[in-house]
Image (cartoon, rainbow over all chains, first blue to last red; front, top):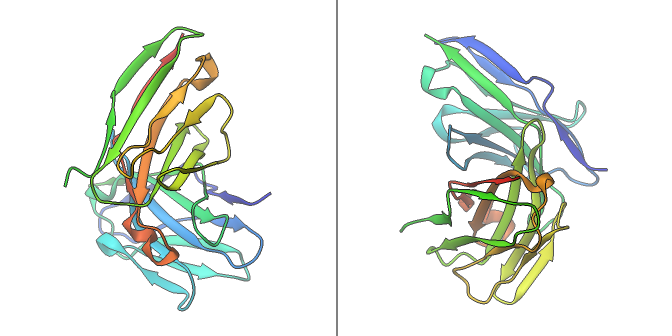
Length: 114
Length: 115
């Protein structure tokens, strides 16, 4: 079965330090991968996507993600964390080429301390 | 634009009751979908629609019905609520096409409790 795994329930980082939120995937065919962020009591917001092309994808709010086919990973990164980045982050993969069906990871809570 | 709106925000049902969760968008998006979010499980796709009159099942469709009579509205119906349907429900919409996935917007959610 196709799936997405986020091995860390929570990531703690100090403001100004780099952050990484991990994601690994198991999909058949070409992977189409996404990152979303959820703030408290809000719906998910799109951050970035990997469809094809460069392995380093840049997205909103200074986030980027690195696609690694050999390690089947799509880790989310940011060079310098902000307290306002504290939120719940979801990795997702498209199950069909029309991208109507997404499978989500279980989410990683990012906590950035001042 | 109001974006994606969902009503109600909160709902408590008794087992066996029926209800409809409303979802509307004013962005002329072809694609709309319903997800449920449960602790430790991420979001799971319930049903989706690629346009008026066209719906299809997602990962967890049992116990839910949908219809799409207009582009704007995509209601989710619970025919006979069960405690296992206690969850937070999110509606989402976007333009069709792979290149438009960055247009996906999620509503604020409906928190449903079934006693």
